Every structure is written in structure tokens, then in C-alpha cells.
Image (cartoon, rainbow, N blue to C red; front, side):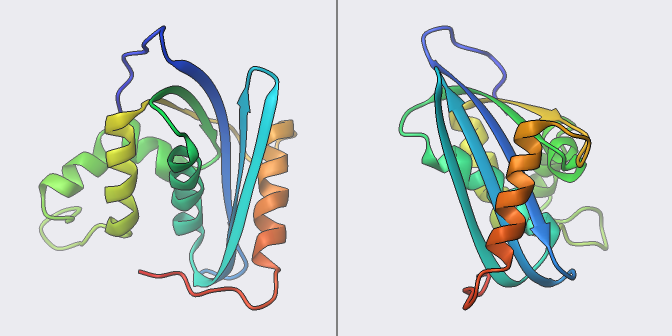
Length: 159
């Protein structure tokens, strides 16, 4: 997380959500990106994945879509994502060889590694929003994620 906002960079507002039917099971992610009146929506689905992987992938794909370094206000209903970044858990897991503690491996190290690299490049502020509470952009992300998870012939989530 690089929260030193640079006033010369583009200011992006991003909403992300992941969904999974069964855990594991078919899942999807949704992203809504807003910049100066422009809107971009992204989504994709995978079979045999987890909700947490889809929450992470939504955030990663959104940030990877940006073509240059940006200031990003990112909104997600995933406390897993927000807390792991804002409280420094993911950096600690990486420093400890992707271990949460002496006995437990951190889950999803492939995705956390990608997200940490993106957060070291962009200036990202993670914000938690309550899911399914009527926030229009969060609700739209959920719709995108659920619809993506229901598509036929979903690819495998590569781990």
C-alpha cells in the first residue's frame, strides 16, 4: 500500500467484488472503475475457485487494467482484502515465506504477491463498504460477479 497521494496522478475510483457459489465452486469477480465521468466495467468467472480468490482477483484485475501509475480509492466489501493490506498482514506473510504463523501457510500467496506489487506501484487507499447494503456501485459489482460465475464453460482458476 502506497498511500502517499500524488496530486499529479489520475484519481481513479474503483469498486470490486467477488462471488462464489459453493466455496470452492464456480465464482466470478466484478469491477467498476470511474474516472472523470468515464466508467469501465470488468468481470470474469472461473470454476472451482473460492470467494476470497475472487475478491482478490477483482482488485488485481482492476489495478492491472490501469495503464499508468494512479491514485486509486478502492472500495470493497471484503474485510479479508482490506485488513490484509491496511493492517500489513499480507506483507508479513510474504516476509515470513507466505506463512501466517509457524504452522499455518497463508492462503492465496500467488494472488497476494500480485496485489502487493500493484500496491507498491499505484497509490491505493483501501476502503471497506458493507456488502448488500444498497451501495449502487458495490451492488453492480456483485451483479457482475454473480453473472460471471454463472457463465457456461468457465475456465479453471489457475493456482
